[in-house]
Image (cartoon, rainbow, N blue to C red; front, side, top):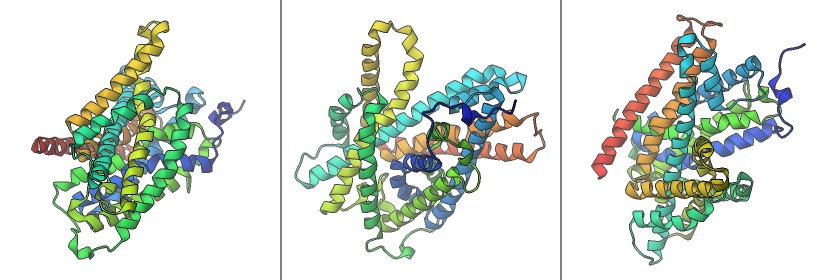
Length: 423
């Protein structure tokens, strides 16, 4: 009997081609984060921003690579057709050195709740961008000049009914429309970035060291798509083509780094120190094309909110559904979705600072999810098999872990400092 091949045991529904996986990964990576890159460049400068984007892209790509590779090897070992991120972490700890096996359930909870908080943070960002966009256009046409907080609250009119959709298949049409509209709005934004650009000497090539933690946090928020990697790989017909050279991952990350670097560079070059957390908020207020881009982005984020919101709701629901009588599940789910929506919008109303949400989510959740945990699980998985205390892979992963901890601590420190200054 030959070795176990996970791909041969995946359900018939798992038939995504390599090209399809590439398209899904690009679509997932090219979200709202691309419009935040000019802000990252503002905190680093043009030269440091370009170098930093390439380095962070390289680190993110490498860390995703080791996560997927560990998961694929683990599937063979435990004879499972596919494993998610949380499953991979839990089983690695269960099969690791005896002293750490007791932390398996904690590792799973850490992954799940980090994913939940990451997506909730992204939802808060969406609410603030929606509110700011509609407010700018409304004020331009003589509408009510209310605060951003008031416009955040008004998003509930659409978000409450939208988030009551609890089947992913009903959200597919929204996703399809959002993808097309998103592409149009990004193209309009790039057009404004390239129009009448100022001289490069008018912008900073580098900033003070104080801006680096914010640059890293914002870049991680923008670039890190580790939450969607495992679901995409698990649906592939030929998962072996996800890694390698060129491979789906390498092609996707190369495209992401180039586009993010380009938008960050041109956005900061065009708008300088006035650049906002979403590039569309810098577009001219008195031009119809710019107003169209603002409204398109706001509509995309309204449509995408329900998709992003699905993740934290699903994670919370899996932990409480067994404690609720089956006959009241429908009402309980509706109540959970309503509470979640009110909580997210309430948080956005309390602190309507787009940049702070991105910095905090990037610094805390994505440092843990996107850098720290994958490095730790590779060490645990390979420990005693083909590596030991002096192996270079151990030291390489410890450096990544140190980078993640420094990014997390410094990012949170500067975000809280900025928050206190804005109170």
